[in-house]
Amino acid sequence: MQAYIPQADNIEISAAWKKVQTARMQNRPQSRDYINALCQDFFEVKGDRCLGDDDAIVTGIGRINETVFTIIGQQKGITIEEKKACSFGMANPEGYRKSMRAIRQAEKFNRPILTLIDTPGAFCGIKAEEKGQGTVIAEHLQLIASAKVPVIAVVLGEGGSGGALALALSDKLALLENSYFSVISPEGCASILFKDSSKAQLAAESLCLTPDDLIKFGIADDIIKEKPGYSRENMAYTVYKVKQKIKEYIDELSSYSGEDLVKRRYEKLLNMKGFNN
Amino acid sequence: MKLFDENINTAKDLTEIKKPEFLKCSECGREILKELVHSNLSTCVYCGYLFRVPAKNRIDMIADKETFIEIGAEKTSTDPLNFPDYPDKLEKAKEASGMNEAIITGICKIGGYKAGLAVMDSYFMMGSMGQMVGEKITDLAEECTKQNLPLIIFSASGGARMQEGIISLLQMSRTTAALNRMHDAGLPYLSVLTNPTTGGVTASFAMQGDIIISEPKALIGFAGPRVIQQTVKDKLPEEFQTAEFLLKQGMIDRIVERRELRTVLAQILSLH
Image 1 (cartoon, each protein chain N blue to C red):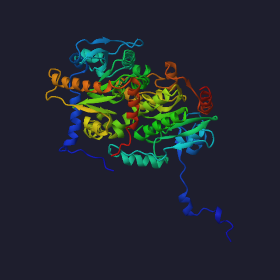
Image 2 (cartoon, rainbow over the protein chains, first blue to last red):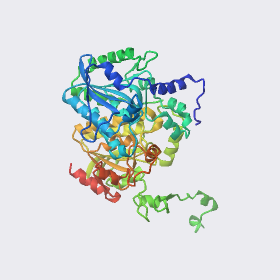
Image 3 (cartoon, each protein chain N blue to C red):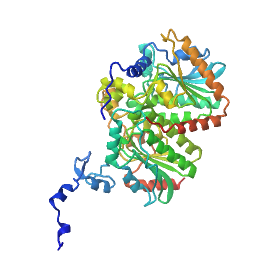
Image 4 (tube, each protein chain N blue to C red):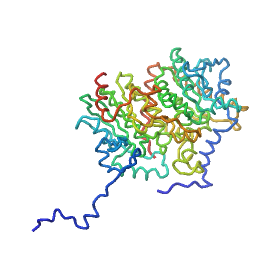
C-alpha cells in the first residue's frame, strides 16, 4: 500500500493540523486561568508528601456552581520563569503523586473531581525515570478509575499521550473545540513511522486526534465551542460554556452512588471496543 | 527397484531446503542457529545472553504440559484509523510470526495451580499494544474474575501502537478497568517484566501487579532510552532503566532467572 500523501487543497488535513497548532498557542488560557475564572475561593494544596512539589500540576479545592470540587489541572506556564518551573506542562512523578493525594482526599470528603488537561506529555528525563514515571502513571490510572466520586475531565489544549490520559480516565470527558488528544505528538509519529519529521501534517491527519474523531469513536462526550478570538484576555464566553457543561455533568452524576459510579465507569470503558475503519 | 531413491536429494530438492536462520547475540556477537537459541530457553549457548522469547516458546516454558487453552486466537487488528501502510505491516508481522496479534492469552496450570496467562510477543510489531492486544487482556482478566483465577501477564512491548492512535491509548484505561475489577474480587495479578517493557504498557498494566518480577537485565522504562538521550544530551547512567536498577529503586519485587520463573510463579500462586 502506498503512503497517503497529503494535498495542499485537502481541507481535512489542514483541519487536524490546525487544531494541533491552535491547541499549542501561546495565548491560550491555561488551568490556572480556568481555576481563577471558575471559582472565587480556590485553595491550592501543594506537594506529594514524599518527593516534593510540581508546578506542572495544580491541585486544590474550589467551589464551582455551588459544588465544592477537587480540581487537578495541568499548567504549562505563561512567563518564561513559570514555564521553566512547570517544565512546559510536562509533569514529573511528584506531580502525579500530588494528584493522587488530591484524589484520595476527594474520596474522603466525597467531593467530585474536575481535571483540566493540557500537556504535551509526561516529563521525559533521567530523574523522572528513576522516580518511576511509568509506575506513577499506572497507579494514577488505577486510583482515578476506582474513585467513588464523580470524575469530570476537560481537555483545554494538548492531550499528550499517557501523561494526559492519567487525568482523562473519567465519567465524562469534554474537549474544547481547538484541542487534541493523541497517543504521540504528530512530529514524533512522523519521525518514527514516516522517517521524516516534516510529515507532521500527514501524521496529525492519520492519528485521528481531533475532538470530532474522539466523539466519533465514542471516547469523548462533548465538544465545547470556543468563541472566535478565544485567548487569555477573551475567555469569559468559553468559561461560561465550560461552567454550564460541568453543571450539566454533575447534575447527572450526583444521582449515582459511589459504588454505581465506579461500576458504570468500568462498564463504559470495557464496552469501548469493536472499532473498525 | 527403488533401493536408494528415498535418501537421494535431487537438485530440485536442494533448492527447496530451508535456509538456516541465524540470530546474532548482542552480548558476545556470535551467530547461533535460531532453532538452537529457542530450544535453549532463548539463551545464548556461549555467554548466557537472554534473547527475547517468542510468546509460544514462553508458554511452553511456563505452563504445565498440555494444559494451556488459548482464548481469542483469531483476534486481529482491524486498522481502525485507516492508517497509512499499517495493513501491510500487519500482514508482514502475521506472516513472520504465524500469530494474529502481539499477544497470546489463555488459561493453564502452573505447577498444578490454575491461572490466566497472557504473554506478549516482541517479535510482532515490537509487542505494541493496539485495540486487540488490549481486548485480549481485558477479556482474559474478565474471565479470571468470572472463574475466580489469578492472572499472570508477561509484558514485552515497545508501548502503545502508534498506528491505532487514540484507540491504543484507550487500552491503558480499559486494561486498568478490567484489572481493577479483578482487584476488587480479591484476585492476585502477577506482572512479569521482560525485555523490553516500555511506554504505555509500563504506564499501565505492567506496573499494576500485586507482585512485579522481572527477568535479569530487561530494559524497563516509560520513555525509551533514545528519546531521553536526545532530550538530555548527556550520557545515561550505566544501569539506567535496567531491571537491576528498578529493583534498587524499589519499583519491582524480585529479579528471577529465566529457568527459575516457572518455579517462582508456582510458589507465588501457592501463597495466594
